[in-house]
Image 1 (cartoon, rainbow, N blue to C red):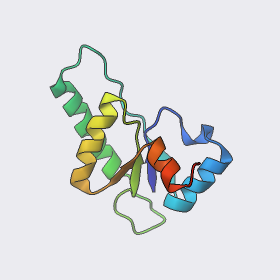
Image 2: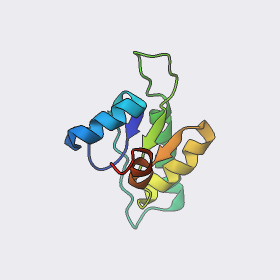
Image 3: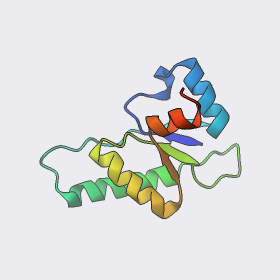
Image 4: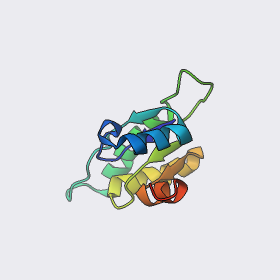
Amino acid sequence: MLINCTESPYQEWTKEMVSKVESEYGLIVNHTLPKVNENMTDEDIDFMATENIENIVTLIDEKSDKIKPDAVFLLDYLPMHKRVKEYLLNYEIESIDFEDFKDKQGGA
């Protein structure tokens, strides 16, 4: 299963991209991460990232025996996404961005 945290729901992706992601990861689930504004402290960002990590790691594919997602699709240039990526390491969940996906899929 791939959790899509990009700003583009997978329903807006091309059929080719959806097909490639499904062949690599199976189920795709959209999850929106909160946006960070200039008034937020590091503690605020940590708190929101922690809440979202808990939601992400508890998303399971009921059609399989997986107990956590295979990967999370993030945009590395966004502050919240960077923080979530750091936390994913603790759960041994892969995080990918568009460049990683292009590399894995041969330039999708």
